[in-house]
Amino acid sequence: MKTRYFFTLLTTIVLFHVFSVHAALPKPAWKSGQLILWNKTVLEGDLCYNWLMETVLFRHADGRVHTFSANQVSQFGWFDFDIHKYRQFKVLASSGTKTHTRQTFFEICMDGSLAVVRNLRQPRGLFKRAFSHPAYFVDQPTMAQNTDYFNYYVYDAGHLLELDRFYTDIYDPLMTAYDKVLKRYIYEHNINDRNLAGRLVLIDRYNSLVERDAKTASVKGMTVAPE
Image 1: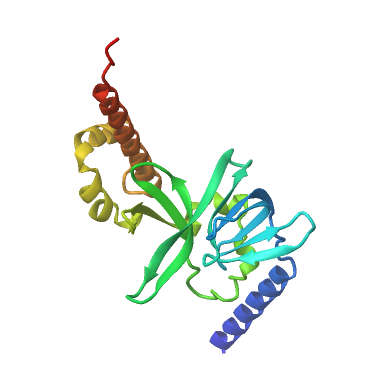
Image 2 (image 1 turned 60 degrees about the horizontal axis):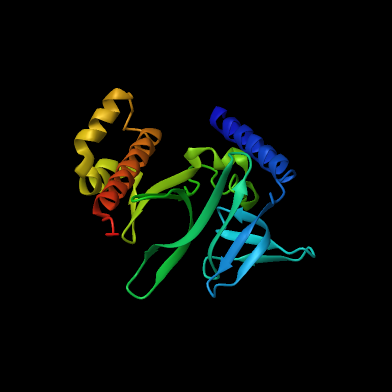
C-alpha cells in the first residue's frame, strides 16, 4: 500500500512539473552573426542554435526564418557579448561507417596546434523524455557557460579525442615533447589535471609553447639580404 501511494505521489509530482515547465518554454535567443553554406554562400543576420536538434535558425531582415542542418552549413558564428568572445561553430565528421559519415556541429573552444571542440552531452537517466524538450537546448548564457552540458574533444588529424581519456588518447601520444615543461607548470600553478578545467589549461599552455617555438624557429631561419 505504501509503495503504491509513493509511486502515485511521485507520478503526480512529475506530471505537475512537466506541465508547468512546458507552459513556459523559453523563446529563441537570437544573435547577430554570419552563416556560411557548403556552396560558399555567406548569409548575415540573426542566428539561433539548438544544441539538441543540431540545427541553426537564420532570420532574414524581413522576418522570414530558415532552418539549416549540418548537411547545408559548413560553419557559423556570432560575437557573444555575455562572455566577450566570438563563438565559432564548424561541421566535423563525428562518426560513421564505410559508406556514410555523420556530419555534426561542434563549437570551437580553443584554436591552435591542438584544437578543442565540444558538442552536447546527450540527456540521460530517469524521466529523460519528460525533461528534454528541444526548447531548453537553445543556446543561451546559462547553458553555454555550464561545462556539464557538453562533451569536450581534441580534434587532431580528423579524429575526435575525448578529454575524458586525456592521458591515454591526448597527452601521451601528442604532448610529451613538452612533458618536463608541462609537469613543472602543473606543479608551479597547482593545476588539477584530473578535471576538465585543468586539462583545458594544460592544452592551452601546450599550444602556447608550440606557437612560441614556431615563431622562434621562423626568426632563426630568416636571413638578411645583402645590400
